[in-house]
Figure 1 (cartoon, helix red, strand yellow):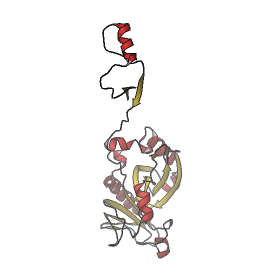
Figure 2 (figure 1 turned 90 degrees about the vertical axis):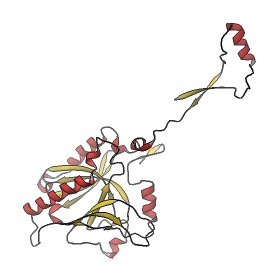
Figure 3 (figure 1 turned 135 degrees about the vertical axis):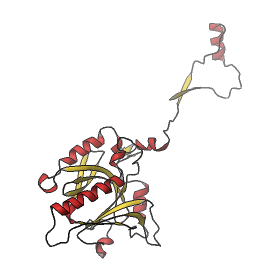
Figure 4 (figure 1 turned 90 degrees about the horizontal axis):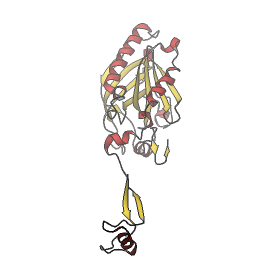
Length: 264
């Protein structure tokens, strides 16, 4: 939007020589200054609808293209058919929040790191549903002296009968050898009606439990007791100072977003 502003301001109502000349030439009528300056007005869209445009995943056609490309990494012999696709936020063992596409297939859970700016699938973690033994749902919990906490609910999926990572992996912020994965809802889950169905954590939990039970029944692991334990309990994240995750989460570095004149 543009607004007109006279070149001369604060004149106290006095006519300039140029204005007088216009009046003399045209007779009666209001003066029209020969010089005017255009001043741009900044227009901001308030609220979540305005912030939605900062996330590349919500731009038209982006999520559809991402899902189409990720379906190509599905291995029918190992994963089966895709049952559902979800847009969630992963919380790692150091409380770093990251945007993820998650696929539930017949026999696998695929956690995909997708760059919604360059439209490229960068990494896929494949978890066998028959190896999942515990699914926990609850609020996030931190040590009493932790300086960087988060609120809200999440879901944690554990496998291979391991409830905790080793000491070395637990204190390594870049370790990927963690026997569980934790998800929460995307921060803009309720801002776009078209994609809201992909972000509902409760629906994801329901379909995941059904898929895990089915995989345990149809593809049991030899030498192991089958079945999945579903618990409602706090989800512990063992961070204390949390400076790295504080910077990551406040700047939303785990999301594909516009950041000033650039996006990453």
